[in-house]
Length: 306
Image 1 (cartoon, rainbow, N blue to C red):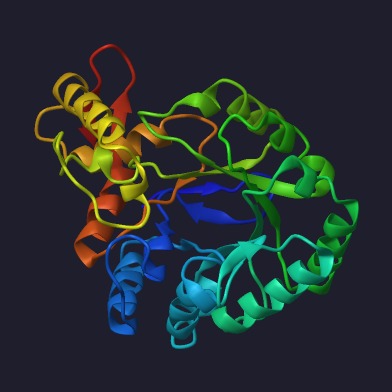
Image 2: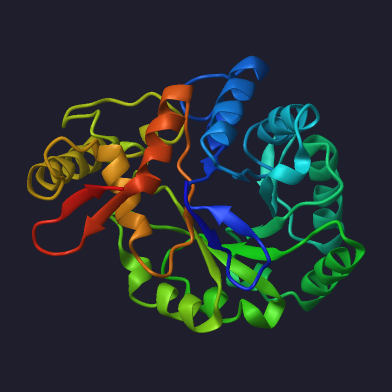
């Protein structure tokens, strides 16, 4: 495993992390504690030290509760724990951006995660209007001073949101989370240059393009999970045809496409860490191997295993 400093923080994070939206049940299957334990245990064995979760990954902080149960039996200090705020999912899903709401969310997340502090607490896909709330950032800064939050970050909803990115340092944020992958390279235009200028860490989410870049699916594939079934079949087929072209023309022979796709993200100098989701121990192992894959970025990428 390789490690990089996360922006202006004092955190050294593995270049491959564990995204945990899937633990909440939205990606086609339900998890139990034993399965989560196996995934996180293997991740740690492979040198992965960053877990990314959120308040709304499953009802009643489901993903956070799975992680918290695991952490209660592991060494909390070995992990960099990232979570988010701004949404709630109890009896129903909704937004919660007031100062009081976010303060309650923080306490609920700390209880669910069974920890006294969150290493990176991220503004979760809110609007610019939600972002422009000085009272919110003042309250969060006080929580940083109290030690409940180590660092603040922003998970931007749109990967061209240069407004929130460019104002990150102003509100005390030290990292940006953004959708970035071989299919969607929009952050390279404005967001990444701003991150480099401000020395912001970058967590690249959806680095496998919702699984399309895993290489497992062909045009005509039908998805039943809550997230991908929202897409039109036309859009799915178009992206999968593009993936076929990428696999044929860009992925070196003998290289796993998922590993290649993650390594592709990591070659950008702005990117600190990729946070792919994983549903099994085997997927964790594939993801971790991307850290050892070096790509030569030209018209015909080649791979060298270090």
